[in-house]
Amino acid sequence: MSNFPTCDGAKLVGKRWQENDPKTGIDFKVFRQYVKDVTVEDAAKAKEEGTEVCEPNSIFKLRKNKKAKGSGICYRYEILDAVCVRVAYNEHSGLSTYSWDFVDGCFEDGAIAHYRQAVVGEEINFDRLPLEIRQTYTLPAATQPLATSGDDDNADGAAAAPEVVVQTGGNLVASTFSLLGHLCLVGAILSGIYVGVIYYQSTKRGKAKHSQLEDEQ
Image 1 (cartoon, one colour):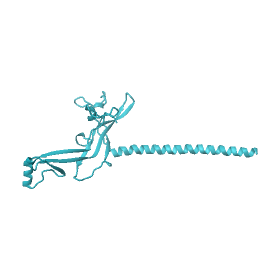
Image 2 (cartoon, rainbow, N blue to C red):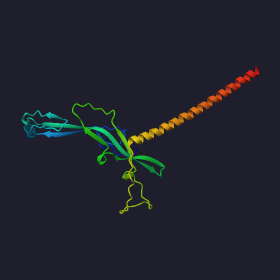
Image 3 (cartoon, rainbow, N blue to C red):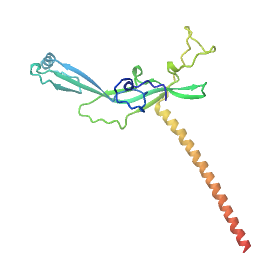
Image 4 (cartoon, helix red, strand yellow):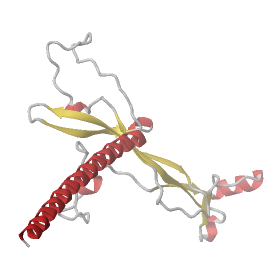
């Protein structure tokens, strides 16, 4: 894929970014932290009302300052539970090539990552993190082909946006691997036929030589 933005880490001077490391990609975090400051007044009010000072599934860290008794900090976390990107097929007619261009994410406001609330005490790993690629016919603005005189234009003279067709990443990946599987199967069959023909011809020549030797004897 192409048309990726520059990574945030690659833009900052002093970051430990190796010379041969990719400089473009998609930035996202595996977790997001939310911090809420709890004052003495907040703690007193919560105690009076019989409520919690922190939101559910938060961790409360009490301050050691005796003058601020009951105050502290609430920590809450959201965990990455899915990644989804949209890509568009782009033909470069002048170069006789094509590319899959990154467009944006599939979630709200074009986000590529989706998060869920972390639960206190939960063990989390990312071995089965869903990763989805969706296809769209809407190219990124930077790679839109120029409109020609025969294109349908809107009232402002801009080229009309093509209809967006979305294909789930599972179907896209599955169809790709299905095609590769069929190609491998055809290749295996052709290879088997070729080996069989070679073996048959070799056996036939061997029998002919054996028959010739018997005639000579």
